[in-house]
Image: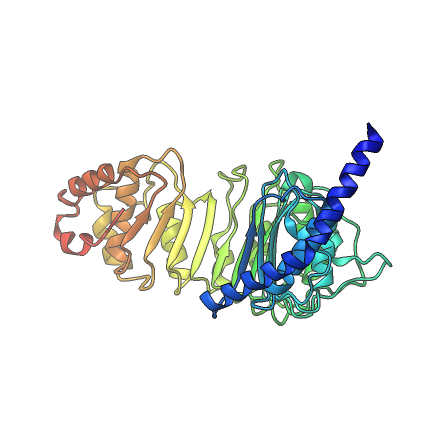
Length: 421
């Protein structure tokens, strides 16, 4: 039976090979038609499962097809079911790609494809569950390192449980010297600063997920300092160590270190695990960062007094994202209902650019949200949107209408009418 099966498979393979000229002709006609229909084609996306042909035969088919398609555009996206090999892994000769976007768990093949195109790639986006991708992209088989000299965008969406173990340090590698955007959503995969080497003068956007011990190692490498990466405008660093602050003595110290990354950044985002929702910090540490326009602290509770202080400290601040304590404390010893007039007399107008307060507390009390929003709207002339995590807009608007008719607010109704929830 085995001999019969092998002969049958060999015969089928020969039939496929004999059809190659016809297949090539059909592919050429197909690609020509695409060129006619879309002369300004910018990107090719390949999806779906393998055809079920013998692997080598199918590889030759896609070699021809994709070689022709890539004459139209050097940008290609591969999307396939997770239980099947992406067709790109069957293609052995693709080169000169400028943009590669791929989803696969075949780490070795992905890395080979990326390394083969290292000299021309400008954008590399990879989503995978596989382990060890980051180091495979950089290391060559001969113990050398790859340099992606033209790469501007690197996005690695790695599942954290597979990237939790650190890779060895790569002291001689400078793989991404022209990088402008780095997005690494798995745990930081190295024990040194290899992803940041050589791009201090180019990096503009950083999204990083790291444990506290990773941050500590990057500090030793000189990354988390006020002089590193001065062109950064967008910084998002997620802290995830639910066991606490690790080597840091306080949240203030930790936050101060995170703020030092890209001292001129306009957008700062520091999401966490939720374990630090009740920590205290020194709000004066924002004094040295007046360029902040968007501040995202979704796991930190910020009371209205702290919000007022932040708005005063950060003249360009337009958006604030935080949690919210459940009870409004007095401000300067002043309680409701005298608080509105007191705030107006002491603070209004302030925060000319402040427009949005996004509250992320899951157990929000609608009346407390509305009251805080009204108080801020009294002193911030352009604050017009209080974003909340629920979709109960009618409930918010009902509470809003009820409050603006109270004696404490009724003299300021025209100013408050612009507020939305």
